[in-house]
Length: 205
Image (tube, rainbow, N blue to C red):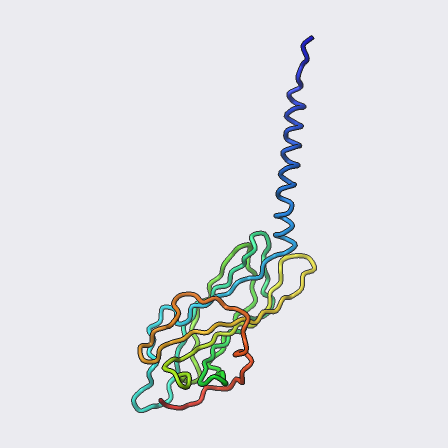
């Protein structure tokens, strides 16, 4: 006795099983994307496309320094957008000695929204309120860039997450060559961020 096969039922069962397996595999991925999102990453290219001259004039008169920068902000989440609800403050400083951090300039970045997996470049220039000196006992000018702000995931009920990040950029005083080229990742600052901050002294070499 021949038995007939209901191909429609077989196909329907196959589809249900495939969808179930797909959800079983995708569910942990989706949970990970939405329940444990990544924090954004930040990096900076200091003196971006800028010809440096770190020497002062012969008469040792006060001179300001223009700092060109390219700040990269990356949303590492493929499924969640980010809000930066507050102004982001960027501070440019340098070390005249190992116990002092002298402020050169500040830059404010207004609040904005960043889409899923998007990166944003903020390119700008700041005029400093003084001229940096070499780190005492070296032939290096050691700059520091600090970033302070907050972000919020585009999810219902999420709160602000504050961040305070920084990085160092060394420049050879004699050659004006940077010790690090390209973008430098910004990380949570160490003890150097807790040093006494003051305006740069007007001293000669």
